Image (cartoon, rainbow, N blue to C red; front, side, top):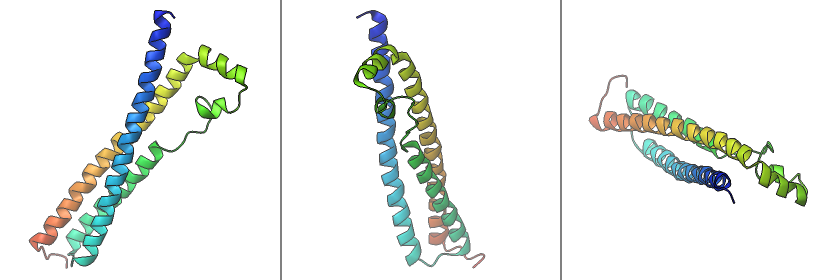
Length: 151
């Protein structure tokens, strides 16, 4: 096996590991967002919220819902068939061997684009989670502080 082949195999493994890492982060963030949404809803139903707190909290919940949508988009299965399992399902045994041995560089490029798309969704979702969390904290402070304007 040549050094170029070893480098391709290492690059392929690295891209696949990055996709796995991103999917693991996404799963943890989805669980976190779900818990925050459920907890916030439970607390908000029990407290007498003033208008500013309700607006800030509602905006925070809306951002968390959009973040959950982005997280789900990043783990949505890609069944376009350009690489990976969907492509292999259409090939014969001999064609799979030829495709794997000759198209490793193309697979690395395709998987890299997939990893970047997943990472971009994850990054946007984290930004929305941070903004939504800040708004929920603001709503809690407005409620605890007893702000009465707009009530």
